[in-house]
Figure 1 (tube, rainbow over the protein chains, first blue to last red):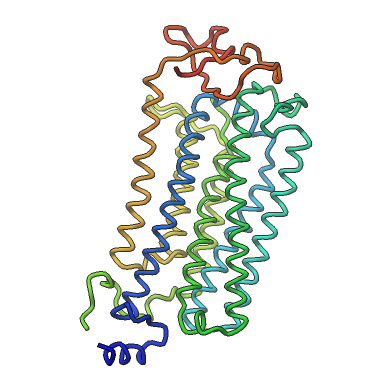
Figure 2 (cartoon, rainbow over the protein chains, first blue to last red):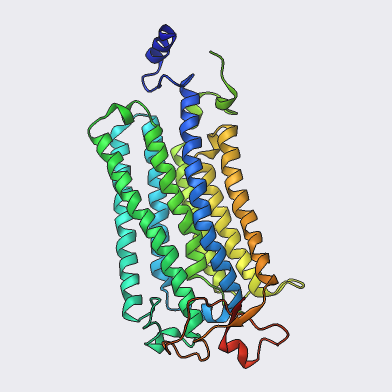
Length: 228
Length: 155
């Protein structure tokens, strides 16, 4: 048995002894990562469920409340995240082709995009805090920013706005940490990433998921059509 | 050492796992166009189709475009195009369960409602309870009655 394991090991430097071949090993990693992502889908899905319920109940008040959000900033952040998703895809492709320079450059751009996203989000949040649009005892104490919406219903909207975009922003922060760790491994020419593209692929999957959530958050939070 | 079903891959060789750079750029541009489309669509008042109100059509368009964008990201960027049958089943099952979860919404049509203390007026911070603001019209009363503005929550 040891001889067999040894033979396999020589064929594929990245192959661990418990797997039959590199395809099975890669597949196990991918399925494992998707299992995690599916739990994340359910996690965010429950919030989208709450959103659907209350949005359908208070269409007009939510529409009025959502007008305080800046579509331009939201669209800018969407573009930033789409670009970062693209650069991660290029980084994974470069990792498969073992082009270290391209991997480092693209992970670097992705991390920069993540920071840009957070800075824009921080400006948006601080404006909402200034206008007392965060859920709490002083919510709506600057009534002109409610645009005539019922304060209770508007507070529901902003509770979900801060909850869902906040949770998403938390995922961006985690993404920055993970991407930085990956960048470090590539920078130090570690075998774990240089000989096996899978670590880069898995971090990429996580980052694409973060983009995926925003693809739904952007139209639902910023782009409500006027009830008619 | 035969290939196990776990690693069965509909595409075979390793080289095909790489997407051409041009395809990646194309997907990015397509995602940008779809984003522009969803912004534009949100400012257009769509007409109602048969019994379906226009606002529902508007929302269906927005969610539809978002779903297409998500599908592009999942299929190309996340590499499900090249994934094994097992990985694909995992992905499909995840989103299927998400879809089924929305059936929970039907539960809210079966509830009775009670008043929420503190929701008597539209003025905020009146010292009342606003923790469970599931406001719905009380049973048997049209939604335009003052009680609706006061607020009721499921029992």
